[in-house]
Length: 360
Ligand code: PLP
Image (tube, rainbow, N blue to C red; front, side):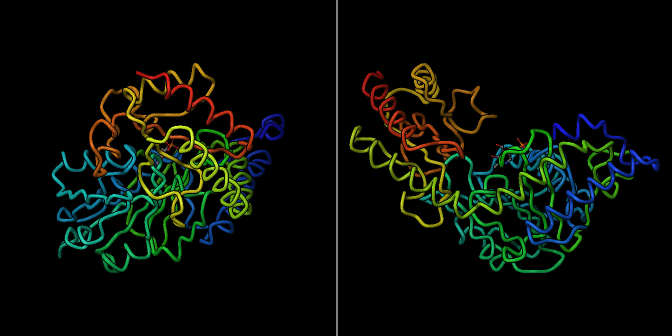
């Protein structure tokens, strides 16, 4: 990215040489991403991030759909899905929010009951950012049925680079991703559109990205995102194995140190859970205070999704689990990163043990 910025890129819509070079870089990035994700080049749309991709997928589908198209989503989605769905509801769409079970997984019986005879857009996340549960999307597809009246979108932001992304196997029509979750620069997202479900743009302007996402492209960041995705997909098995063994070490050591600590969401040995995301409660005050105390101790964790961390309410995901409200209010999310080492895990357990021991 730095090399490309130094080179001084042109506008990819210009026909002169610098413009053509910029266009070629975008074409190459699209091809790299299509190869990595097993989709067609024409299926890849560049956006500014996961939030924009989700908004385009949901509001763009509904805008192009008949008025009777209903929406089915889950209670545990990221705000980048919950809010466009709430907007659609405010504009008159019928919306059903499907509950989750004790392990954070989607309630498939409720999903089946929620999809009626009307055309329906179903939007369910591939992996949950707070508790690390994942969704069997092939099962979602078989539950809701096929055809133009059954549009299936997934927010795949947390899945990319952590577990296999298999868009054809999932049977989704639309999938959102974000480059910065796999080490790319902030400001580039993807909406993968398979089988060309009808979509209206959210912003209007030029012909870039088939007119669905007009505006001059951020070429260097797009090229860097493609490289980040190529590496993340190539190394996914190694990443999953390494972070999952660190997560198990963290959980076992923490339980030995703080016996009443609880894991929220899927069990540690659930083979389908995200390998790197743990959500724990030890009922010692609210999660926000705990996050601040851990930060003072040098451990950076989060409470709920980043977008909700300004609020004192328990996270909507933990509130949706069948756990008591005190436990929900004390949940903190620990993410293991690409550069986390075993020594970091021991330090983290030490800090957690000390802080939880001292907390009121
Ligand atoms: N969806 C999920 C599941 C996320 O975790 C996030 C960000 O954390 C987003 C969407 C939003 O992505 P972005 O920050 O690229 O807009």
